[in-house]
Amino acid sequence: PRLANQIAAGEVVERPASVLKELVENAIDAGSRRIEIELEAGGAKLIRVRDDGSGIDAEDLPLALSRHATSKIATLDELEGVASLGFRGEALASIGSVARLELFSNVTDEPANGWRVVAEGRDMASRVSPAPHPRGTSVAVRDLFFNTPARRKFLRTEKTEYGHLEEAFRRLALSRYDIGWVLRHNQKGIHQLRPAASLTERRARVAALLGQEFVANALDVEVEATGLRLWGWVGLPTHTRAQADQQYFFVNGRVIRDRLVAHAVRQAYRDVLFHGRQPVFVLYLELDPKVVDVNVHPTKHEVRFRDSRLVHDFLFSSLHRALADTRA
Ligand code: ADP
Ligand code: MG
Image (cartoon, rainbow, N blue to C red; front, top):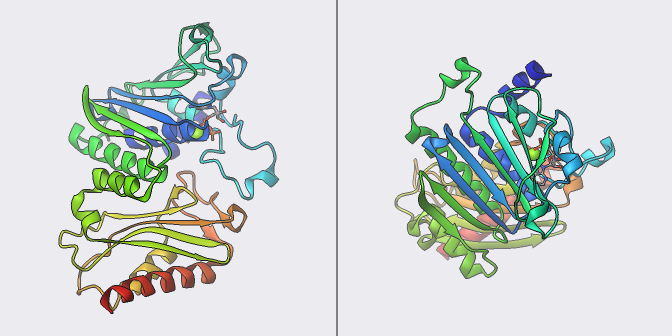
């Protein structure tokens, strides 16, 4: 199983940023309201995610760390229309096979009821020992790839890896405004984001994550049609420092890159943008989970819409109208 886990780790754990993404997605799936992230040395030394979610029962702890153990779907039927971010049950096992992983959890409000379990690149430790922890879960991942030197060699500089971590954080924090977030790197506070309920608060979060320039030159979008809802912000042509990487598209809270979506956005911008300029946007598409398939790729950046034509046309017409209005 260790080899199987390490092979699976190749798919799931590419670099520190992918570890962060998996741990945070678990925290989100656990219903957390507050997620704290602590990083050291671009994540190579430490990636710690602490949440106040449901916690994991002591008996379930070793299972949570074994391959293909997921508590999130019980049948293949449920795979259709899956709403949770994780559902493969391989992230923790994979990470534990290529790093030193320490997990604390508690399902009660009494801190003394906490538990701890460790895995150090071996088969998952089955030893669970009592350890104090507030309700929720903390996962610390240390010395990533310490036992897979070939993979460790592929880690880039601290700065580069940190850049990927920050980008992963941006996507996650943009995906859930109802969650409060803390990000620290090398003991330094980088972001402290309180839950954002109102549009003003949400805009402030986007400004904190993407810069004041982005929101100052962005248009609010909010369109609803049968079963489809699109909201968020699109950069106006006045956006002078438009960066191609400020393109965020979320489908039911999941960040995705999709050719159909990119095409619809580009088409909508065609008459509005000056040549060579990249559209920038933070957009949220919400639709019935049953009409979108997220189980295309392990890292889940791709989706398949049941009616892709409908989605394309909805995106195009919503954005085209919004952008055209600004020129009228
Ligand atoms: P998946 O998310 O695909 O189910 P993971 O390997 O990421 O697989 O996690 C395995 C299981 O461990 C999850 O199904 C969940 O039951 C449990 N788990 C992991 N992280 C947390 C967390 N932060 N809070 C509560 N449960 C968790
Ligand atoms: Mg998961």
